[in-house]
Image (tube, rainbow, N blue to C red):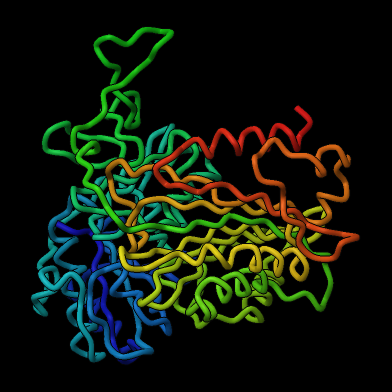
Length: 472
């Protein structure tokens, strides 16, 4: 049974509507707040939380409820209110469902999932208590050890919600990994996938045959020594610590869908006139013919795209870094994550961008040189890598093997070219010479690759290029 219940409403839940929802367990439940008042909690008699409710979020971006929940929301703009029940307490799940059902009824909307919000009646919680675990301080965390924080999620798409983003930050601050446990049929948002790279963080998929396995690598897992860790194969040795791969992970079917992935880094001089997001918007327009649809500091991306508002937020948070997610319109799946940091070099933007294409759609490969030149001449591009691979058009990350991407192009920014010895920039180990971009006296260099998704030899060419540029 799901632990998260969401109300999607046409009107903002006012204080009286929220109060009616919070009385789902009757007037005797205790309440408190956390997160500087952004989270309201219903608690047991000992003050431990049964249900935590996030502040309502105004969503002004089309397609987010459909992408993340498979739900049909009210017309834009609408309000997204999340309630999370404490794991393993049946009455807590009923409380969350009744809370969302009351909000949907009083504020003109619907609740997700529908089966979790069927009753408006008061839930009897007399005598219900919650185990006093250290994890109760974090409403998202279900199990906490000295190595990892474990989050149990039951959504069609595991997104970088405000809850989950807070769990990542809390775990990182404590020096812990974050492990996300999900049932079969779940996928990840690319925003979450990109945040699970540090061991022992991982995506733990429940499986009828192998018990648990890593949704990104396929390694069969067991709970051991306070975390989910790979099982050693029978033939494993100290020199060859191999692990079995789950059968479900290897159940792969051919696809004609593709993804175009672009990773780039820009550096800008810090000034009062600097506006961020321009490189991302320019690249998005070059590849799709339109700007991004929306952005936010978590999923769902709730704000209409605005470089000015993004810049204001990053300036308010400086010198702390700012992480954002950017999405496209439903008819052209696109998602980017960006990290904005203040460094000695200036203001840096690290962006990972992906677009999805169906069997009858061609990625705009021919526009890549012009897009790269625009970033190199106007937006302080340092470097850019473009890849293509066979993968889902909707960009969701499935818990099974997907082939790696292959490089289409690598771009070295003008400043990096200027600082490099001539013998490295005028010569190349590749079959094709680099294409100069921008002014002749200060060019960036565009290195093309064959880009055949079925031929991984492109990575050998990429490695040779990197060794050449580094002088190795």
